[in-house]
Image (cartoon, rainbow, N blue to C red):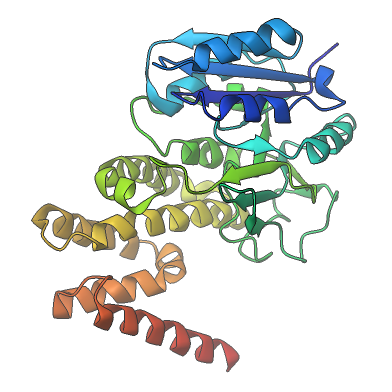
Length: 343
C-alpha cells in the first residue's frame, strides 16, 4: 500500500514520552502512515522503545539510529528516506489526537494540495487544554486556495505558520533541496519557511491533529532555555531573513506576507531572551543590530511595532522588558495602537 503521510519523529532522550507519541499514531488508517523515529544518539531507552514498536508494527513504524546532530539532522534524515506523499514532523514529547489523525488521513486520500494546514492544541502535563491554534473564520475549511489567494495577513492567519500545523508534499521539499541546519535548535522554522514560495495550492482542515505538550523540563521554548540559546534563534532568523531579502523583489505579495509572519514570530522569540539580560553588553549590541535589520523592511517593521517601541524605550532609559516601567510602556503602546485602529 502506498503511504500517504510520513511522520518524522526526532528523538533524543525521550523514553518518558515516546510510547505515548507512538501509541497516538496507531489510528484506523495507520496502514497509510509511515512513522520514522530518528533516534538522535539518545542515552536512555528511546531506541529500545522505538524498536519495540517497530517490531510490533513493522508496516507503520521504523527506527533510524544515528549519532547526535540535533533536530535538523533528524528531519533531514527522515526526509531523505520518506516514502509518503506528504511529510511533517511530530516531536517525541508531543502526540496526535488519534481520531483527528484518522479522519485527516481519510481526507488526504483525495487531497492533492501542496500545503495542508490543520489545528494544533497546546496541553499541560495533565492533558488540560491551554490554547488552540486554529485558522480564523475567514479561512474556509477544505477549500483549495491558490497561493495568491492565501495571504496570511489579510486572512488574519498571523502566528499560525508553525510546524505543528503545516504539512508539505514530500516532492516539493525534495525539489527545493530542503536541508535544515545541524547542531542547533529552532530549525523547525526553516521547514516552515523555505517551501512557502514554492507551493501553488493550500488547503485547511479543522482537525486538532497535533497535541503540543507545554511544560516539559528543558523545553526549548522555556525562558531560561531561550536565554541560553538566543544565538541559535538569531542564526536561524538570519538565514531566513537573508533568503527573504534576496528574493522579495520577484515574489507575489501573498507569499511575502506569509514569509513575514514567520519572520515576525521569530523576532518575538529573539527579542524575549535578549531583553532579559541587562548585564550583557553583547546582547545590547545584538538588539541594536537586529533593529537595524528590521527597520530596513517597512512591512516587517510594521508587524513588530510593539517590540520596536520597546527598543526605543530601552535606548532612552536603559530599562529592559522585565522592568515595571518597561512593561507599563508596552501596555500603553498596545492600548494606543488599538485606539488608532478604531479610527
